[in-house]
Image 1 (cartoon, rainbow, N blue to C red):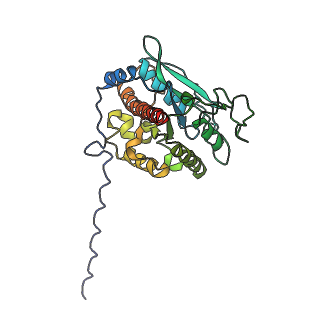
Image 2: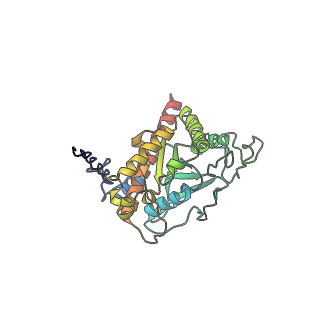
Image 3: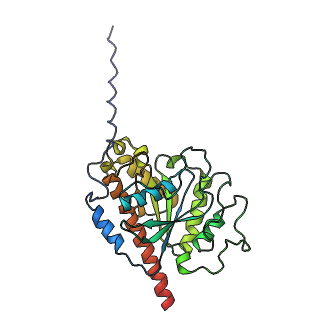
Length: 294
């Protein structure tokens, strides 16, 4: 009787791709903190203050990022925007609030952050029309957003005659890197609708991708690996695909959370994002100024 032929062994499984890329997909000068601070301190835009609007889903870390920016600018722990840590799924910020950024030694930088209510699912949270009115400079500080309807022109917080400094000069979408794949479609649809109105107004737009340390274990161990991380690169590409913002306008960052002392690496990636955001806002304000002169 003939022997049975043994089946060939299956090939070994292909090795999983490395979590780290061989080269960074974006170069970083980790020693340029003081250089960026110097650039920001001598900024003199055509419009003051430059107004930067932070918006995004509930829990994305808008207020935390604003506090981290102020902390990077001052070099010490601060609280300028109140934060919520309970994770209720509802926005902790309910009204529009302008945050001035202090300079070390006194005075303020010529840019401010406008913080608004977070986007919620199923029609809850801030109305898209309200965000559009904020873009146009028609909503005054302190207005409490109503999830059931947009601001009325009869409201005392409605600005009928917005000045150039009341309008938004850069729109910043705050997205959480650790949850971007689970974002609800209704929230993405709202963000796209706001982006469309911002584009009609020629307002520059960027994404700040927060919580990169939660999204990637490599980055959690060493923040300087943020641009070597395959996973963070994928998150950046995913956010670009979802909102249609180019890759070079997307900034992965780690905000301050439990730390009470400064971390130069955290400061550098925050200040890298801030420098571009402020420059984009300044360029937009200059373009508007020049077009009115013509």
